[in-house]
Amino acid sequence: MAAYVLRRLFLSIPTVFLVVTLVFFAFQIIPGDAARMYAGDQATLAAVEAIRVELGLDQPVGVQYLSYLKRLSSGDLGTSFITRRPVTVEIGTRFANTAILAFGAIIASTLLGIFMGVVAALYRGKWLDHLLSVLAVGGISIPVFWLGLLLMFLFSLKLHWLPVAGNATWRHYIMPTFCLSVYSVAFITRMARSTVLDVLGSDYVRTAKSKGLRPRIINIRHVVRNALIPLITTVGLRFGYMLGGAVVTETVFAWPGVGRLLVIAVTQRDIPVVQGILLVFASVFMLVNIIVDVSYSVADPRLSY
Image (cartoon, rainbow, N blue to C red; front, side):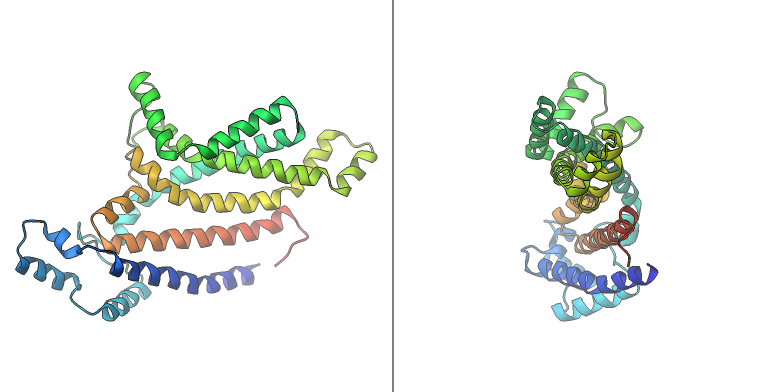
């Protein structure tokens, strides 16, 4: 197992390198001048040129790229153009807030989504199945930003039950977590229903029924357990996508996380911060994929690495 994990980590290096390269050269193509934005609209050309030299933006693109790779190899993500603080500090002070939000959302999505999907499959064709299917389609169709604004209008401005923004108390976590998890609950519900229906039609389930096993034992030991492997993949992918979804959610609720920092950095053309955040997102996504692969052997002992 340890050898497999190390091999996967080693194979992830080219992917990280590709992400770093694409992000770097993307900012060379995007219109705009980071030095001008840093200096301000009222700055003179001489001041802008001085800042460009200070930030190293006057050097050829190839030199900038090699310099960036050299810093990255030593764990240095660079310094923010705007705050002049290390990028690792900028991300580190906010990453915990995003992680808490994403973990809370994925736990709620997994438990609720699998439960709803299993129930819908076991009651296939009945009113409960139709109700859960409609809710799942609605959850997938609702835009995150619109849902966030609707929750703020209803529970904050009208009912005054929950705070509008921030993360000072546990009450601040309710609306962002709910907003971030709605799509994943709906997606996992549909996947769980489809997977459980496939397992219910398998030969070993029919054999278990012919032996006279109780439905509860069949559903737990044979149906749910054998449906876990594709669901593990779905949950792992959803956690990775939640990092991207957190960008919208954190912006709507003014959540002090990495997603909101990414929006601010893109707006201000703070290239080192954007590069650092995307590198962290890619690394977390690949780490989650490795954890998902390892989890397969836990769900199905027949699989080994």
